[in-house]
Length: 341
Ligand code: NVA
Image (cartoon, rainbow, N blue to C red; front, side):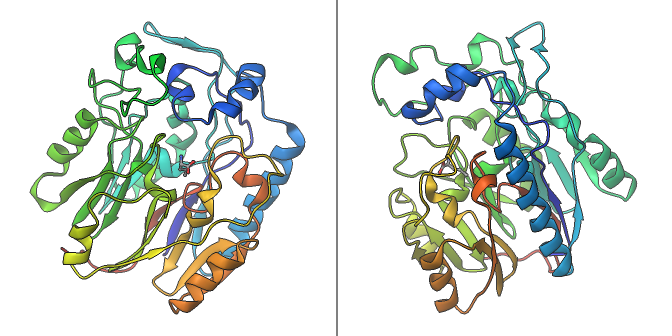
């Protein structure tokens, strides 16, 4: 990896518990969102998370990677458009959700949470700079996010296999996609609909193949703590969320390794994700991985695979719902466009 964007937690605000947030978050956490939605996250946790992210940046630079950061934005302002209104935004902590790099193109994704509608503003200085340096800069149609994008009947049953987003207009988060050369894999999730996947298929054209994957998952949102690509022909898989299309990878000769369970405790809090962030790792190249300093079983798994672990503490950063992969978008990597399927 040569260049990476690392998100920031400064200005982070708890999103309002709108139905699309509710569908993605564990029920036990709903009271937290009801109490704090629209208000900044607890300052002491944010400060500790910010310090961890600064350390992550130093480590990446020490490994020879150029690090770029989004602008500091105050996400506590009201969001109001002709179609919806929420009391605040959220953060610019997870560039993996909003920026997708495909070749020399950088795509600002049309995310589905209303509290993330204006998140792009934090990345515009960077995107203008990349454009000046020759990148192709694309913004798909922004969803209007009125009532019709969300299925109001979703919560009538406990679990119905449905999604909170309808097919009213395209939406997708970049973190529901992963890429191996000419092949992209995507899951239909609460924040990525088939219309969004169709949009990407038509946009990327014949040069790339998009395959839709599915998993046993009641709360699908972002593929990178479910099925993580480690390198050409190697995937680590969440044993609680089996993939329904494994045979496709097996036929292509890929190795799928189940990840050991996380060993983290309940403190600092987990406000936005499962503890499977232990597998939300970042590969610097096929032989070096950034992995949590606490997750010894996961480190052992990588060592057995012949991959060197660079250990970093992300305990407080994890509280906001992301691990190494979520907090970063790799902008430039060495290598040529390969076909693995
Ligand atoms: N929403 C998923 C993925 C987070 C990166 C989870 O909580 O495991």
